[in-house]
Image 1: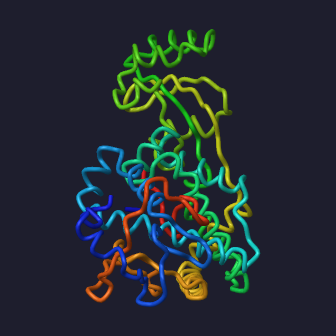
Image 2: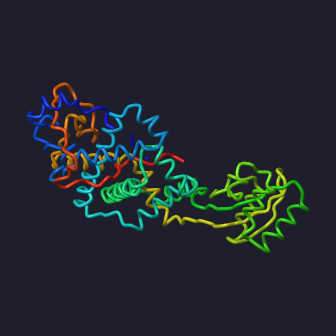
Length: 354
């Protein structure tokens, strides 16, 4: 999906260096209490510390990412900086991430993860707290919009898109189903009659009677699946039914009482933007990288060396070199003057894989 600070400075060192001028990227000044400045936008040390603390709240994130807190802090600051750079690039290219597009991307990630709770859990384990997840995904969408805009001149043959669509048909035609697996037809017949009479009993009957232990405690929920993911008898039945249907299917595993919950079909036209992104990935990465590097240069990104140094080529905060070894006074409690960047994610990053 990203990845607090180790002790920034001891009280003694902080006092000794309080009068030194702060520099970032070797040139220019970073104001006291700022972790970085991006143009006229100031990312405060308090803002960075808060985002890092939220990211390490999950026990798994604490164990894995917290093992190198300084790196996690640099990565988090890099996300905040890249958000500002990305936002400026979007202004230049006259594109936006609409709420609807963000919602659609979140819904897609939720389907991949197996639900909203699972997505939140995976993001938290990857160091992205719940309050920061939507902004993180918003930046992913904005990055897609920028990439689409600056590669619109590149042609992709229609037959290539059609072939890719067919290749990935399981992704573009999926059924969401639940089942109760039992050993005999008589038992299946009884359960089918019960759920048709009272559909609200399906989950309880699955928990009580299903022999499929992988999902019986989840109401028999199989999630979304495309063709090729079920045995042929089961696949034919669920793809041949309508959403809302209850039916009985016999397979090598036994007798299934099935609830077809939903069918999601994506047309070639709807899938084309995503297919184009895949075909043009190399060109997109190059053009977007060049644009963001230029925008970052024009914005004069400066990083407080106590957190690292800005690398314009990688668009990342790297460990500070010995030449950067200066610091600023420790921020005063409640420090928050100046404009602050929202806690968004970085373009090109993704939430933890499902």
